[in-house]
Image (cartoon, rainbow, N blue to C red):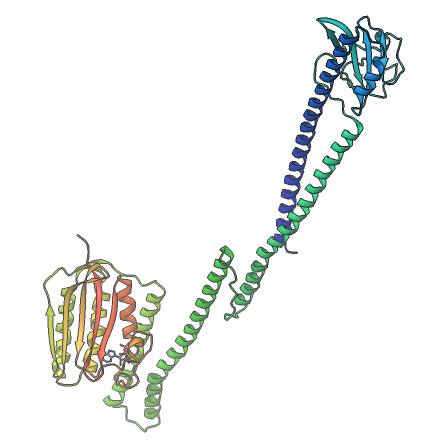
Length: 473
Ligand code: ADP
């Protein structure tokens, strides 16, 4: 048994013992007191009826002759012993026939029940326990076995069968209390096991995850807090597994991306060393271009890893996105002219002041524009537009870069913002694309609280839009 089981079992045992003990004790006390009340009522009724019968008897015969038979009849099954004296204290009748002819003082009988006839005391009677000896002291009305109660207080003579009944009842209460306690303990252990079992399973699974078995999952059987914990555990395990898979994929992708330019550089340098290639401008330019590709790849990787880990530091300031778009359009227009592409800018008037990092916003726009320039054929058209737009009820600006390029196949469209994803038919690789440009655009836009999405028709062109919230006030 684990330590938690001990604790739960201990707490349960303590609770059961306390509650069962206290309940049984209270029930015992209550039963005894109720039973006593019941006896007192019965005894009082008995004394009253003896009083009235003896009074009637004396009134009828004006003497106590032959009263002993009546006394025996009166006692009946009430238990104890009835003793009757005349007004002078001389004992006239005794259901045990021992004290007749003696004085009540001899037996310390005091304060008897008065039998009054027409306002005067015709005698006294005493109700005593049956085993009272002559030497007993202080016996009187309503006394039982040494219990001294004189005067008019309540009479609590408890006969042996009554005492047995009371004991029996008390025993039953303790036994049922103990049985209820055992049942509660058994049920409690069953419930405790239901709590501990899933915790143990979770514990085992957590150890498996820690040892690297990331495919480990636990079964979710309940909808309570433990069920929620199991679900969170599975969610965590799935994330860990996904992260590990994407880490491995990323490493493989990086290795792949580095290999091509390095192979070209190595091959060219080897060729020059072996005298196959001349160390001329052409070959040196090849080496320089491939080095530039490597530098760009490393810069892009750094950006994306910072953005994905949430460590990308944005120099936030008030910027006018319209200025940024115009500046990027001016820079792109030189390249567009070279390729005989017409670049149209359409900036609608409206609020374009946003809070953002100017360098990153330039990077977003420049990435989209250079993609458009790369994918638009000679004589094509690129439209760069900016307008105000509500996105999910929030005011913002939408920048769109629309081209008349080859378009993106529908199957590739949902993946183009993934790291290293390239459309297979694309000429991008040959033109130096790292496959990270759009992933960086997505991370940067989201870091600004914005969104990016693409629309495309194969053979007709693509439109890339990004939306950013405008500054309030
Ligand atoms: P790269 O740096 O290789 O261009 P990106 O992340 O920028 O990588 O783009 C991902 C993929 O989306 C590339 O394979 C590219 O072919 C495709 N793509 C990006 N922009 C366009 C566009 N304007 N028209 C057609 N395809 C595009």
